[in-house]
Length: 140
Image 1 (cartoon, rainbow, N blue to C red):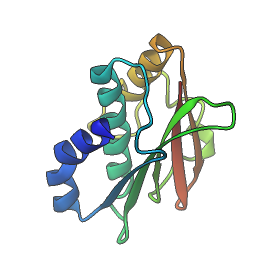
Image 2 (image 1 turned 90 degrees about the horizontal axis):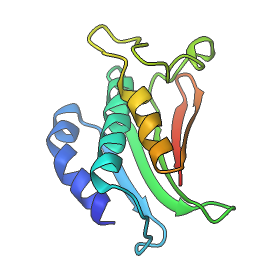
Image 3 (image 1 turned 90 degrees about the vertical axis):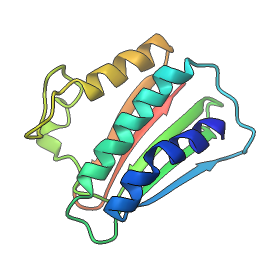
Image 4 (image 1 turned 30 degrees about the vertical axis):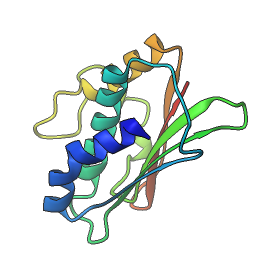
């Protein structure tokens, strides 16, 4: 919950200026995770900012960040948005270093996020239905 509160504060100006509905949920509120907080913060900021960019042409942009224990009892954090999504033909490329679909992108954000998750013995996966929903999942 502490991490989510910090992220909410860090991103509040961007949320307000882009009229995006950003919501954080943790179940339970006392959910704990052993991780490098600074690295995890970088991963989540990258995923949330990517979601914001996917919502640039959306009138009703929503980003939901949720933390919970999955069926296997692993802590899972998801970042879900209702933006433009990721087309199936590039899904396999998005974690490749320097691959980007953005005019001003460097292509290192998702690659770095994957490396950070590997350092934590975790995984990062994505499911996307273009123009409906994209969900990135961090599993520890």
